[in-house]
Amino acid sequence: MDKQSLIDAIARSGGKQHALDEADTLWAKLDCLQQTGRYGLLLSQLAKANDKSNFLALVLEVNFAYQFELQGLELTYEVKQDAQEKSSIDFLRTTSDGDSVYFELRLLQQAQPIADSISAQLQKCKMYRVFMDGQDEQGEIVRIQHTILSKVQDEKGNPTKFFPFAANAVNIVVVDATASVLGAIDIHDCMLATHGDPSVKDVYRRQVFGLFQEDKPEYPQYIHEQAAKYAYIRSMLHGVLFLFKKRGTGILAYQLEQYLIWNPALVDAASPRRIFADIASAIPVRST
Image 1 (cartoon, rainbow, N blue to C red):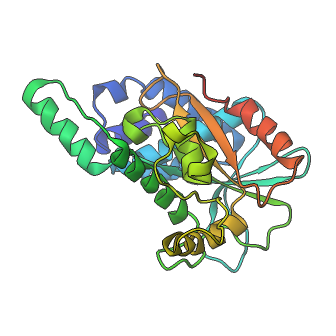
Image 2: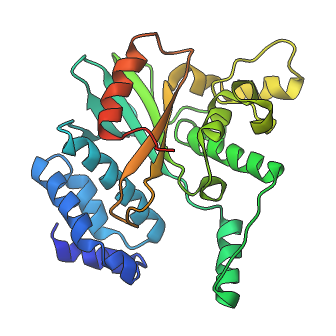
């Protein structure tokens, strides 16, 4: 892949002048990945991109991988945990301690009704205003949960990613949540999505049952049914890495920050600390 291929892909995918202005900076990241010899498939997919959503998802993978490689932390792209399965995981990071950390990425874009409302307002008066109440915020948290679930199992609950065959596997779904909750998503929202209402103070609660939350006998029947839907993800997913584009960085060539939320049912006292340290050296914790 060369720089002109990148420029062509940006244009085909609907990128305007602001995006094209970042071609040089993004190309420097791509060239860094290209020099490793481990990202040929990613670069090939990016060069062929002609759809905005697909292009932005691939750009997320580029920025994610670059921050690891910049720190000398090698990733392997598109790996299978089980040779018998068709699906692959986006990235594998083998740490110096022997942990096999699998990352499956997903870009969560602005909800379509909100995006349509903003677009219509901008066409009329070059300004927009959107307000979310508690129920709207609950809906956004549920949308995040569904996004995470969709990376692990299908609508019927059948596993599609992460299988119990990989030795020393640590399974992490990675979600770029920058645009969630009108761009105001915070650590409380991330805790709600994963650990539910009991994990936050009353003021932040939104009647949410978390993906990693334990079911209890005293909970109502609808919560038991919800917990049953999350049974596989609680048994196989070690954590969720919430990504955020650092404020003031680019549209395509940006820096990422993170919150990493663990599943207490699957992690011991030691492994979260050493794995977190490895990840945080590439992607720092989100600044407040």
